[in-house]
Length: 113
Length: 113
Image 1 (cartoon, each protein chain N blue to C red):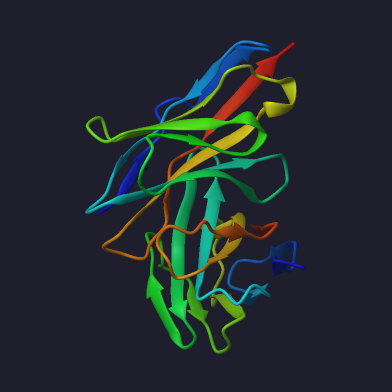
Image 2 (image 1 turned 90 degrees about the vertical axis):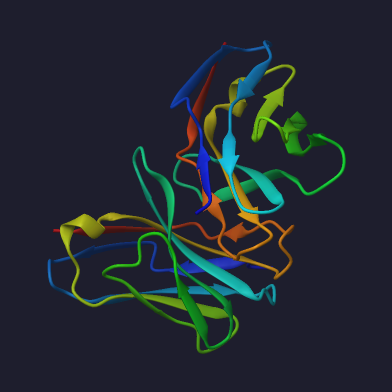
C-alpha cells in the first residue's frame, strides 16, 4: 500500500519558471492538503480540497494554484516561481470525518534560485 | 481563525527522564487534536489524537497526551524518554466548524544519553 506519494522529491527552479507538484493517494480519502514547511514556521496550509472538483485557500495561498480533477490526485502549481517559495512541500490526505488523522507524503524539496 | 502554539522551540531531556512537549490551541467549537512526529528528511507520522472522552490519550511508542479544556492545552508526555525519541514534534487542531487542519510551529526534542 503506497499511501501518499509525492512527485518529484527534489527540484531546482530558476526565478520565473513554472512547475507542478503531484500528490497521489490510494486510500480513497476525501480530503487532501498542501503544506509548506519552513524553519521556525512549522507547517502552513497553502490550499486544500474536500472532494473531487473542489478546492479552497489555506493560510498562505498567494503564488500557488491547485486542481483536484480526480479524487486520488491533488496538484500544486507554481506559475512563476520566486525565491520566497523555496521550501519543503508536503501533501496530506484524510477521510472526511473531523476526528480522523491525516497521512503525509515524504515531501518535495524545492529550491528557487 | 484557529491556531496552535508550541511555546518551546526545543526541549532537552536526559534518557530515562520524563518528557513534556507543550501545546495550546484556539478553535471554534469542539477541538480535534493531534500529535505528529517528524524524523530527519521524512514526512510526518501520526502519534495520537484526542476526540472526546478521556482526557488522557495513549498513542504510539509509549507517548500519551493530556487534554485540558479549561487551559485549551494538549501537552504530549512520555514517562521515560529514549534517545530514539529525538525528533521534531508537531501539534495540530481541527475544529468541528471547519475543514482546515492547522499545525503549530513544532518543537525539537533532544534526548541525551
